[in-house]
Length: 325
Image (cartoon, rainbow, N blue to C red; front, side, top):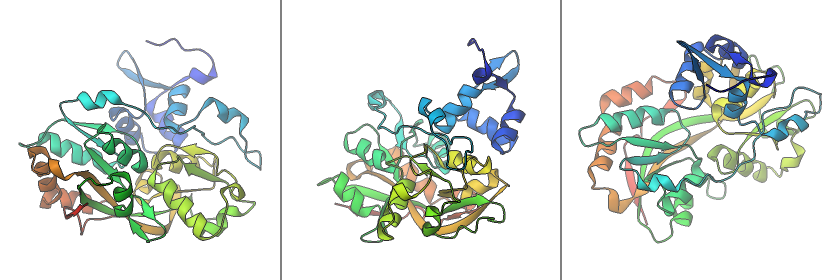
């Protein structure tokens, strides 16, 4: 067991973490189960340290020096970088990238399918996912990359990141992106122009994530500079962490997926855009059993029904694919 000391390493119960992050207790256990939140077992009890919380939320050592304009507590901050995981290349399973929580269900189904394999998750964003696919670090990249010039998703990025390589674009879901705000939207945040207001504190996503690319594209179209937005420089690594920052009032608004609201009853959602969340892999792999299994699962009525009942998702195009060259 680790040695703990001081306020930074105070140990919390799952219930205390739920109250601290304003989420459900079961969500805490799910985060621990998925390996997203580190915990320590003391006897039969699970405990989480403040350091574990800060690590999950993407807080770096620089966060103590970063305060908001109205002297609220500093928001979680992280320096983003491409995480190199060369060891993934030597796995006997399927390696799939992406942050979307629904991927956990898909991976579980692939692992249980007669044609399937164990699936490893590489928790990198869309931009880094395509980069990793090109350099053969992963097998499947989950992407939601908006092209502001074409007002389309994913295809133009695939052609740029994998030039001359035939790929399969397999549709997963359409999902709603928008602003996380406090219940009742007391600051009346409705558009990207509202982010530059003096009374609004924003929390950002890391460069390379599809959400960050959507934000920067929208700001560019509206001729808004990131420096005009209070909190633009403060970054977290997931939709959950962004929603948590707003729920705990460390920020007033964040951009993220509507599906997160089931875990944050204190938040409301202001829709901005419906995006296409797709899976990309090399065409030469398409006839391999595990890829056939993945396509079968996405066309399975039971799997589709399970996903359709979750707020914020549209499954009409799920399982359809096209070849991009």
